[in-house]
Image 1 (cartoon, helix red, strand yellow):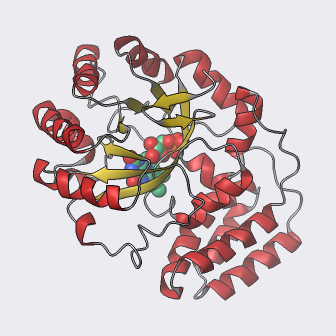
Image 2 (cartoon, protein in one colour):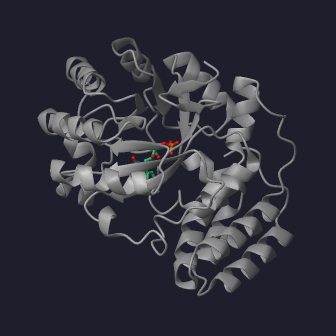
Length: 329
Ligand SMILES: Cc1cc2nc3c(=O)[nH]c(=O)nc-3n(C[C@H](O)[C@H](O)[C@H](O)COP(=O)(O)O)c2cc1C
């Protein structure tokens, strides 16, 4: 499939940025846009409870440049009462799509009764989705994991329930709730989900290269691909996949990683107040370091920096010394 149409929104190519707390803010989104190939951008998860009170001009979670289109906003909901005010706010922010987080396994999120905890409470999810559907005509999507244990009947009923309540697209992180990133994702299970519903299904988990993307599509038959950590390691991955998998855009040539890293710092400086920059640079650097065989030196130099200027100096010193970056990670 070369594109996905959700109500008025065309997602072409069907390449999605995964929501990632601390990472998928305005600076990374703009860096990705500048490389090309992205079909739909995403915010990090936003607390539906707090969202109505957030000041869009000041909140680092809501900063957005005009070119960041189309942008999906992900809601972390724990109670049905939070839905309508959160959606009203997203309409005011001119969201192009709204995603519901039903997959986050973080203990703090689960204790709130949100994220993957909700997959164990289909009745609550049904009420939340119905309420969301009642309050928006925007594309409404849901991001799920495979569940607590491999249980086809339970997962099928859950996915069909989501479709029945008006979810327009499902993205499936192909792991169980407790499975760590080192475990191979279960891409064929995304194919099972696709067989159960009539809405588009997007595969997520463990895609870091063109080869991974092709394997995932072969194993899942998914309608699109969602990339998380791979987007912070190689922000050009969408451009690469657009060309190699969907035949869109030009072949990606040699990418200057030092120039890209410095551009990221520039975008952080444009997007955030000084005190909001260093933490975000450290988070990004943790992933970006994986481009280099001795990336742990790079990452630890940035992690122990006391300022963005110091981190930049250390990064530049590393780039000057480092041999050619490894093409593999
Ligand atoms: C640092 C980090 C933060 C994340 N935050 C979120 C989030 O806010 N919402 C969400 O649904 N998933 C979140 N995830 C999960 C990702 O969206 C994605 O499902 C997961 O990383 C698997 O995809 P990948 O292998 O392409 O990284 C996060 C993952 C990471 C690594």
